[in-house]
Length: 247
Image 1 (tube, rainbow, N blue to C red):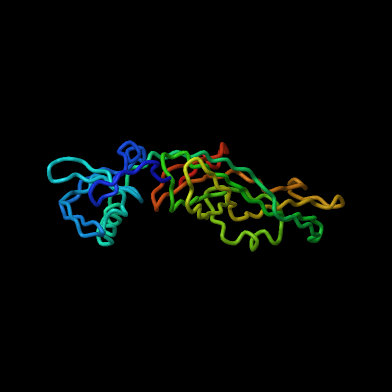
Image 2 (cartoon, one colour):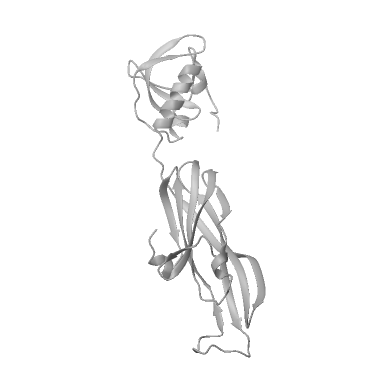
């Protein structure tokens, strides 16, 4: 967004204070230093706050000045950018996370007296940024839980990469959400987790009396959002496997 009205005072392009204040900048005073305009005029001031396109300065006499970044020399612009990088504003985080299961593969085959169906499922996750600012460097981390019950000869190698947590097998991963503008959403997919179902031929039975029809169960998911490596939000499904789990 660009300011609708600008004023030129001396060599500085001035931004209306109300517009600057609405951007939600950080306010942590810098050292007093000289700032120069492209035509060589200088002022002594310290930075109070800055956005990508504007800076709030406190002059030697105490007066505050809201100016466009382009009003200053290249060296000053670099200094302001460096100050912004180390004085990021505190973010009021908020996210809406919606997710649903989706089957992506299905294959049926005979394994001796057992008919086995191999499937792969994933979660499709939509994240809306309800924070008070645009955010970059977002990642969605996830854990997907399943219980293995089917008699499937290929279940072990198809499930490579899963880790065991108590009675459950867990798939862990993460997806880059990139930059998400405020009140905008992004939809991503997790990796796929294998599920199997086995059905014993009707002419056979298990001597121990076990069920002839066995099926793996998808036992929920746990999602966490990280911003620049810091955890800022989480969502869990209501499954018992997830409620009692540790990250």
